[in-house]
Amino acid sequence: MRIRLRYFAVLRERAGCDVEDVEVPDSCDAMQAFRQRFPGMDLRVGFARNAEICAPSTALHAGDELALLPPLGGG
Amino acid sequence: MSAGTNTTRMIAGPIDARAVADAVRSPAYGAVLCFEGVGRNELDGRPVLALEYEAWTEPAEREMRAICDEAAARWSVRAVIVHRTGRVEIGEPSVVIAVGAAHRSEAYAASRYCIDELKVRVPIWKKEIYADGDAWIANTPAEGPSK
Image 1 (cartoon, rainbow over the protein chains, first blue to last red):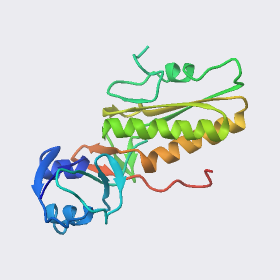
Image 2 (image 1 turned 30 degrees about the horizontal axis):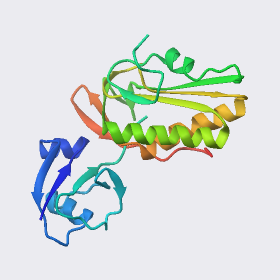
Image 3 (image 1 turned 90 degrees about the vertical axis):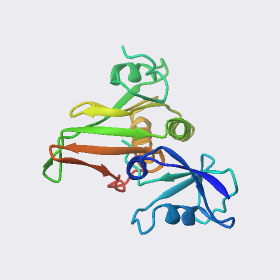
Image 4 (image 1 turned 90 degrees about the horizontal axis):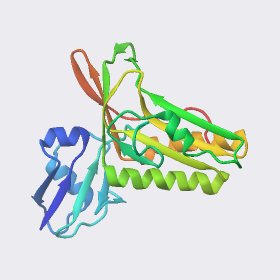
């Protein structure tokens, strides 16, 4: 199935874009989508599915937008 | 006065801290507390030339408003948070948090709550610019008691 990934900060720079449509397995969860796109990357990443914060184990559906959130640095 | 600093939001230009503080004044409030988070010129001894902030704007503003609402409900205060995006020079505020309260104890508690929650909840990222490169810097847990 196809989902959209949204990147910020270090991941945006690594990917070279803000958003990207990718193909993932139908049973894919948030963490698996991250690992597939950035294999071996050591990052304490957070997730938001369709702009709502979600757990790494959250199941994804075709057409979802998954935002990958690197460790925050506001303030 | 900078435009649009009287409500909680992300802005691209300099923050007028006075305008943010003015936004929380009320005849019922005996305390107005204005916190500025300011770009610092070093990290562990390494000179920092400037900061660069990136935000997921709409969710960041939504989360900052939620934090202000929580502070208002818990301490009967009015809180406004304004945070910058883009390049922030050393000595300039990257975030301004103004709290108006009947008394100082509520103002201090609510202000501390707002900055501590912002650092762990709001989707904003900070890059430090050095003479010879740059790095994304993650927040560390708050020091000391905060709640």
